[in-house]
Length: 192
Ligand code: HEC
Image 1 (tube, protein in one colour):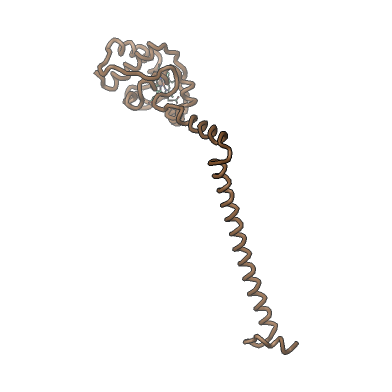
Image 2: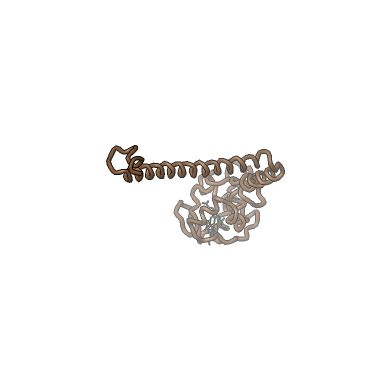
């Protein structure tokens, strides 16, 4: 007992050295354990990543196709330059239709002036200065004739709603009214 106790000792008492060995072994063990733990977690993550990517590329070809086309359909299917509504592709004359612009001013006075200034100053809605440069003609026509759906779906309209905090009410414009107001906006933006 006494002999073997004295064997590996540099400092005197044998039990200290045994304690030392025990502590060292324990800490090595513990580090190994932590290491293993990290290794296991890392492999689990790697496995999960591998499993997921494997699924997409080979697994269920039908499924992954539909999900990816649906996902891109949700974003790419919506034309943010056009908005949503019955107007698709509007080419306007580079010159102003004065009679139309005048008719548009009448609509503006009655139905829009309460909320829209002709400067860039916000009233209830944004001021109209530059509005025909901010949006394509079809976007403006769709917005003014289909405002509820536009506020529901259109990112630019929703961004304005977040600033104005008021939903623009449907003004029940006819297509003629809408074109007339657009011409008035163009006049306001300097088209001659
Ligand atoms: C009761 C207030 C109100 C009235 C009336 C109103 N609007 Fe608006 N309008 C808004 C608000 C508010 C917005 C910003 C979007 C939102 O918050 O709904 C807006 C946004 C717009 C925009 C986009 C402006 C931009 O800077 O991009 C256009 C175009 C527009 N309105 C046209 C019209 C037309 C045309 C009329 C009249 C026929 C009209 N509005 C009447 C409140 C109104």
